[in-house]
Image (cartoon, rainbow, N blue to C red):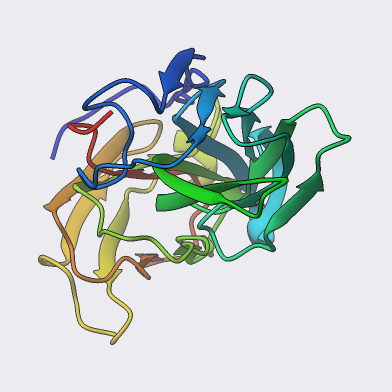
Length: 268
């Protein structure tokens, strides 16, 4: 447990990366090392292969700011060709549970998908030519997650929940939980009016089965001061967690709680 000045943590948005992937290049096809001998040459340009959903909530779990409400990925297939005829269509399964994107040969071959949930997703891209030849390649898309929850001047802090995860192909590498609670300063007359009482705060983290994750932590916080709870889990099986903050008295506090969910970066 450490004492900190109460302040809002900021997260930077994800860095846009440009990946040009030619299906004709050995070792870069993402096709599980299956050698392809057909006529279709899929050339895929991804605007990014990862990003971070970032939202901020306040009292009563109201979302007040969605710095990044979705991770936008552009699939550019406009340079895809076939040695047997014209490319007549594409199908993109984003892998996040949303509907498949279909097109015909008259479209320009550039498609955008908004990932609204976090996880690791296997996107499948299929091209068809005028001779009904088909070829499918796969790409991995990673979406991390940051949720910040602020309660101001309350004696009954909200329960903080992790928002919905998509149909991820893997569990997270890490979940980081940080929660800072400040005993709201009583002002210059606090000593006279009795507003400078300490408050005892207990943090309890639960998993989806209502089991306590780690151990409950309790701290006594003096007027105007703050304490920080931190917990980190490596490769958790379940991430439908919630954080409960309870007080021993009717004393107002400010809280700033953050869930950070990070997926495997090694394949990116």
